[in-house]
Structures are given as structure tokens and as C-alpha cells.
Image (cartoon, rainbow, N blue to C red; front, side):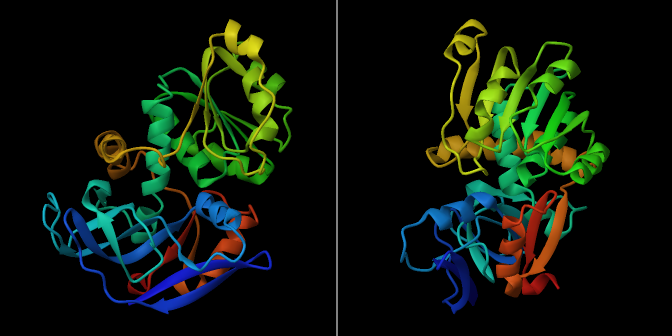
Length: 327
């Protein structure tokens, strides 16, 4: 089979296609023929942060496809079933998927739509529901809302009955997100949104803030929080990993700050999130209340161009790479 690997040389990401033996599923594994795979900013940032001279490595952390073989203790899954989930080396013709990470693909979804779901849905479920405890009627603020995770956060928050404020540098993207239920769009890439948030919330502030931008807007996020507000840090697109923290505000307003990352979770904790998505989010997708927003689809052999588009910050929603089988 073919698989795609990436390496940074001279500040450029170089993609190579390698021949590899078809893997065999071990216990609790599914061998999946990849039909489409999602592209995620976090893996590209990690690739760029790797040590100079690091060898080429497989790329891709989520995929959708058809099961071609099931290992021992593979759970309820069967050969021929459509599944999607988190995995390693997703930009390949076949991939091994842990059965505990696998989710059935709703019948109405295309392969490209399905590939846009796994990572974003798990991240958003973790930060809005499991940690963020977002409730109907509350205000959610998302910085950098036009990203794949940002759009997914908007969609789930609206399904939960929350009101949503989002920031973006593009007025066009904010206008497009009005169709997804965005209550207020703030056109900015700077930490200057506090007054607009306070005006929209009648002085209350945001009950939950999702900071996708990073440290450059941390202080403004804290300023914009309501009493007993929660702040989720899910990324730092700006490359700034620190920022000033108002301890007086943290103390007096009983604020909570938390991170959203699966890196330190054990298998049981990851499965709790996956099962929560299957139970609470997939029904919303299956009946059309939530549909993934796919910005652009590239064929697998144009993975380099897909990465360039991602790093240009021009996308609205997810970028998906289609496998040869998807046509």
C-alpha cells in the first residue's frame, strides 16, 4: 500500500509517498480502507516544532473509511462497515484504527463529511460538555472561530441552546457563520474584543471562553469572562504560549481555566469522550441538526497543497484529503 510522510527542510514541509506492507489488525484493532482523512493544524504545528533533521514521519490523525478486517476483541464492528475515528498515519491507503476510538458513520454523510468529524467532535465535546459544562442560555466566546474546531464549537453550542460570540480577522467568514447560528461576529485579530462582548451580554461576560488563538489574547479572554466563567485553551495559532494572567480577577470572580488535549489521557478517559460523542453528538449529525463544514477537499496526491492552504489561514471549517477510493 501507499502512505504519505512529511518532513520539514529549509522551513518547508516536504511530502513523500512510500510503499509499505499492508498492516494486520491486532487485538481491538480495525483495518480500514481510507476513503478520506481530515487535516489538522495541531499536527502541522507539531511537525514544524520537531527537531531539525528529524526523519520523515507518517502524517494524519483522523480518517473515515470501510472496515476490511477486524482483529480479536474488535467489539461490535464488522467487515464492510463505514467507520471514522482518530488514528495514526491517516494519509495512507489503509490504516489501523483502535476499535475503542471508532465511531459509526451516519448514513447521510459523505466520506469527506465523515472525515471532518472525529477530532473536532471529540475536542469540542471535551471542552464544551465534559469540562466546560455549557448550558442552554449561557454565552460562549470563541476566538478564531472560523477554524475547524471553532466552527464545530459553534454548531454544538447552538444545539445545546447557548448563544455564541466569535472573533475572526475576516468579515466574510463571520458573515458565512451567521448561517450556522453565530449571534455576534467580531472582526479582529487583536485583543480588543472585551467591550463588544460585554455589550452583547449586557455586562455579564462570557460564561465559557474557547481560546484557539493563543497567548496574545489570553488577558482579553480573562477580562471578558463572566462570574464563575470557564476558559478553555485548545490551541495557540499565534505561536504565543504564555500571557499575563490577572490573579485578582481569577480570585474574585471564581474563574476556572483548563486545557483541552488528549495527549495525557489514558485509554479509559479517551473512550469516555468517544462514547459521549457517539451518544450525544452523532444523533445531532444523523438527523441534520449539525453538518460538518468542509472548506475544501484535496486528492491525497495534493497533500502538500492542502497543507499550504491550511497554513494560509484562508479556510472556513475543515480541510479534507480524499483517498483514491473516494473518487
